[in-house]
Length: 339
Picture 1 (cartoon, rainbow, N blue to C red):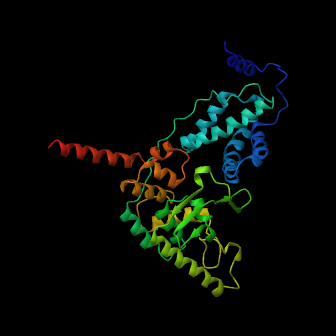
Picture 2: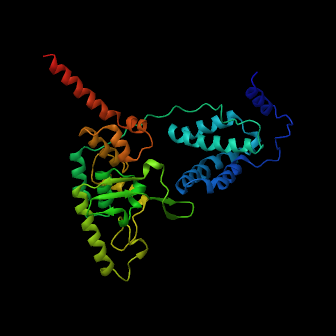
Picture 3: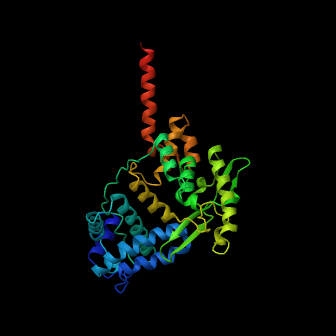
């Protein structure tokens, strides 16, 4: 029997080992405590994601079981995963829950609350393969015509022509945009924290690759010039009601209020539905942009750098459908050579 198997057996038998605290906190409460301890070590956007998972799913479920940290078994964890999948959560979402549970229990082991981390041996649901939806250039043109003169226009335009993330678009400020040389610097992101109902602009991005300088297409530059001029006019026009807090931001309404990430997501979803357009998420505009680049001959490495992906495989895995187009084209060329 291996050392790991022995440790697991000892926990299951609930032997009176000195590192085990029988009076330990309930696991549901421990998860919330663990999150607060690690709050200062993670990005605010990461904390927000963890907060939602722990407070809405993990903690309520395990509090109902009444189990303490040192009583949680691998079977308990597997039952939790099965329960959440039966309630409609995707396998990919449950895998995120697993990451939280595994990290929290790893910390409990480090602090000698438990001897063995039961999440390590938990059988996990098979990861879903998500097929990304995207619009063709013609569909993008049609979308832009319909969305014009709405608050969504600038966010949709930027996502469609630059492939930026929603959080990057909301955080864009005019100091990052050079309309003379048509360049844009990505160095901030926006996160809406449901935990305290606030919008936070962070200078710390997802990874080092997320910091990048991009060239702006002239058509986008023209629209941004118009938007900047319009915002200056709105400051004068709506002076008494104008919110000057976000006056340096690109995506604001006529009264200076910032267009939040959630507003973009929900309004875009309803907009697509109400106009009988092909179902697509706002984030899929980013995929549409990258797909258009690939079909125009831009290689995957350049697309990776443009999108701010940390590694090549992320880009390649998402855009395999475009690679297949290239392979079909190559096959046709070979066929022509043989005739």
